[in-house]
Length: 94
Picture 1 (cartoon, rainbow, N blue to C red):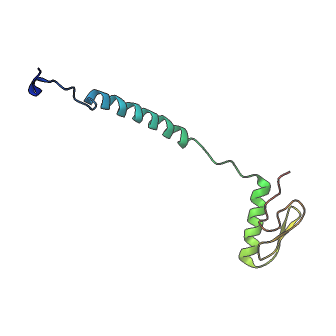
Picture 2 (picture 1 turned 30 degrees about the vertical axis):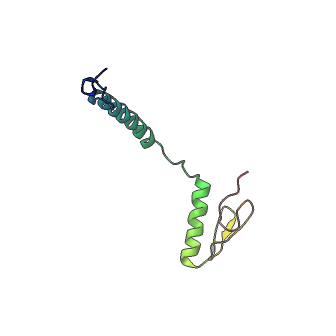
């Protein structure tokens, strides 16, 4: 019969080396992904979209209608013209 005091149990858990390796891997993955996310840029706005947005903002700000690229913006922000979303003033996708 084996006495309870003589039974050797293996300790459960992780060693310090295992924890350091896991932290090093996590740090490496986060560092690489952080660099990748930092290089992402928003797409540039086209000249047409920029001119339309500026004309709409100017019409709203001054209270007078503005026209650019055959699109007339009313003081309330609505747009009148072909190929333009009537509410937002953005060019419709073709």
